[in-house]
Image (tube, rainbow, N blue to C red; front, side):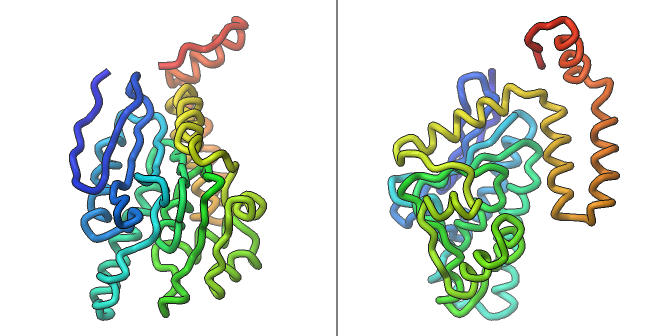
Length: 263
């Protein structure tokens, strides 16, 4: 199966053999995959290239030490308010693009995930952490606060006390603490992190395409609207799937007591 071409200096996009799972890798291992302006602009482009064909997406960082160690502090240190807002917009464009990517995103947190790196992981749907992972919203020690969605997504994922400690104190959580807090779904041996993320993504990619997209849209409504509006949205997504090839095949296969053959 052919897959879309994408070429960038600091971000790579690779595909599994059948072209259903895309892997986006932040590739700046010498900088612990810190998100400079070039990388921030490349990530949405990679996501656009994968959007139509991917049935699941893995996001990770190159090298042995870091998922994404944060933003480009040297660059940020020279910004004024207007420049900071523009840079903030770039960061939000990345995390928003991950959160709203049409199919599930699995973050393989294979090392340090600080600041913007933590926020990138928070924007994913599922997180697998290396036993060596260290995660934190460490902006307070730079005289700032999380600015790429961390104050909102973190507080929705973990309990209020944990979120406030991470933001107010800059607490860094090791892999076990992340799992206990619900920040990641599972912890695996370091060398198995990306492989486990691919395994989950491959399982997701086998599920019905239209239903996956509808499910993600509906789940995201939890963060966008009051429950009553979210429930109405769920009704529309659920009923709108009827008549799709996946719905017809899934229910026919169930009634015929066989495995479905989704498109």
